[in-house]
Length: 112
Image (tube, rainbow, N blue to C red; front, side):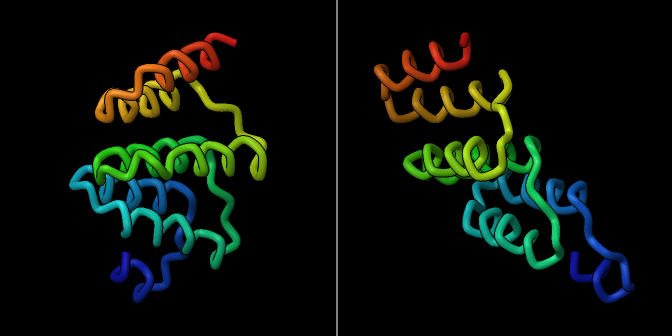
């Protein structure tokens, strides 16, 4: 990312999504959140892939308690409708924490 910036390559959503996803693989949720926040400094708006990648990073970093706020930001602030992948990520996080009632709630929400 830094090399691209030094070479004058302007980042876009695909680049940020790739960075957030890379952070998510190793559970680097803080770095993923920082990249998410940095998007706005370039005038970029997160998309469905951005939010899915961020929630995946939070799951891998054992930060599942932050996912409802991210989901709310996604749906209310940005008007993005979650898809099946979104709900699978969320439900997987609930499984890690044995939150059975939350699993039922998100599953029902997914079916609506």
